[in-house]
Image 1: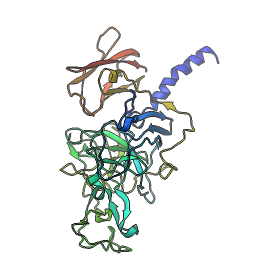
Image 2 (image 1 turned 60 degrees about the horizontal axis):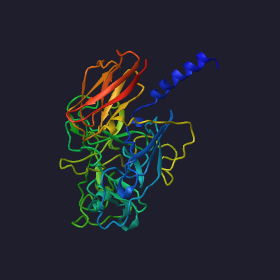
Image 3 (image 1 turned 90 degrees about the vertical axis):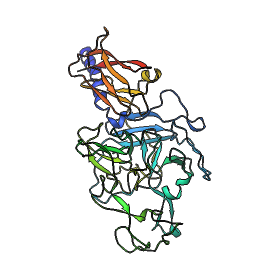
Image 4 (image 1 turned 30 degrees about the vertical axis):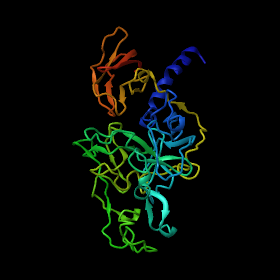
Length: 409
C-alpha cells in the first residue's frame, strides 16, 4: 500500500471508531482501578467491547456499593463471569410482545442484574397467580434493595437506589442501564413532556392495584383458569402481580413501563424505560421494564445461556481514561478524540461546584467554562475549536484534574 494511502487510512481509524461511541458504549461504570466489592470480587463492569451491531459487557455482577445482609436468605453472591451481548440497533416489536423472563431482564450500568417483578413462585404452583417478589421477598432485600438468587446472582427487582440519587427530583435521572432488547433504562425522573420540555417530574406508572374482592379474574377481565387465595392480611392486594392492571394514559408510561421521549443522552429522542417509585420512594409496579418488552428480543438475548455470550466478531475495546479518577474526580469525558462535541459526565454524588474548561497547550481557554452537576452530562461545543491537542480541566473548591483531549475535524 502506498504510504499516502496508508497514512490516510490511519487518520480515518479514529473517525470510524469515534462514530461508534454512543451512550450504549460509554454509559457503563467501568472498573479502571481493580476495585473490589462483596467478598473481594472485582466490582462493576470489567470491560466494554463494541462493534457496529453489538456491545459486549463483561462483568461480575457485583456492585461497588456495600451489599448485604439478606435476612433468612441463605444464598451468597458469587462472581457470575458475565458477558452480555446487547444490540445497538433496537427495534420496536410490532407483533406479540415478549414477556420479561425470570432471571435477568436487563443489566444496570454497574453490571448488576435486573430482574422482573416475579419471584418464580405461584399459588399452588399453577402459574396463574404469580407472587410479587417485592412483597414476598422484600423483607430480605438489603439496604440497596437487592439480594442474591440461588445461583449467586446478585440482582435488583426494583429501583437500585444505591446506584444513583433517587431523591434528586431537580434533574433528569441518569441513564442507569439497558434492557436486553437494547433500549435504555433511566432512573425515576424525566421531563414532564416527552419532547424534552417542562419541569422535571417523577415518571408515573400507568398500572394500578385492581378493584377486586376475590381473585377469580385476570387483569384483562377474563375468568382465571383457577381462583387465587382470598385477599386478606396474609396475602393482601398486591401480593400477586395479577393484582395489578394497566390503564392506558393513567400515568406517563406505557404498558412496558417506558415511553418515546427526549433525554439528555438522546436529544433526538429514543424509546426509554424508567424505574417507577411512589411519593415515599417505594417501588411502584411494574418497578422496571415489563411485564413485557417494547422491543424485539435478539436471538440468545434471554434464556438460560444469556449473559454468557461469545465474542465472535471484530470488536473495539472502549477505553476509559482514568486521569480524572486518579485525581479523585468521578468524571468521564468522551468521545476522545472528539469532533463537534465533547461530553463531560459526572457521576452521582460528586461535588456540585465543579467547572470544566478546555485549554490549549499554551494554557489559554478555548471554550467558556461549564458548570457540572452530579449525574447530568454537559457538552462543550467544539465546532469553533481548531483540530489539535487540548487539555480539559475540571476544577472544584477542593479537587481538580486535567485530561488530554484530541480534537479532529
